[in-house]
Image 1 (tube, rainbow, N blue to C red):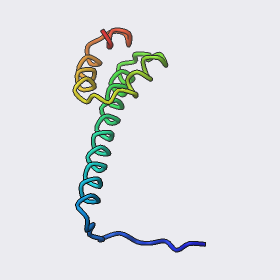
Image 2: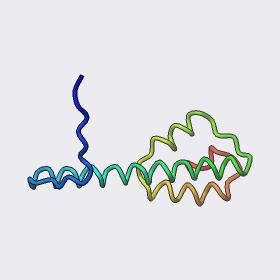
Image 3: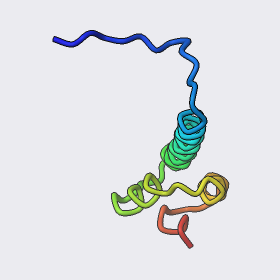
Length: 87
């Protein structure tokens, strides 16, 4: 069985590694923000008692555009049915 290597505190040496590690972290943060915004849309709709069909739920959770998701959070607070969210 292989050994587990602890890289905590390791300083990446090459510019390639530094650049790509930074890009990966930025992508991860962006994905996390999008997931959080999608969750907020669904939470607002749920709190208002609005049923969200699976097709719309998938559309919301697959969206990676945080600006669009923020607009949907705002719309979720005022619409009467989930179908109106995407208009």
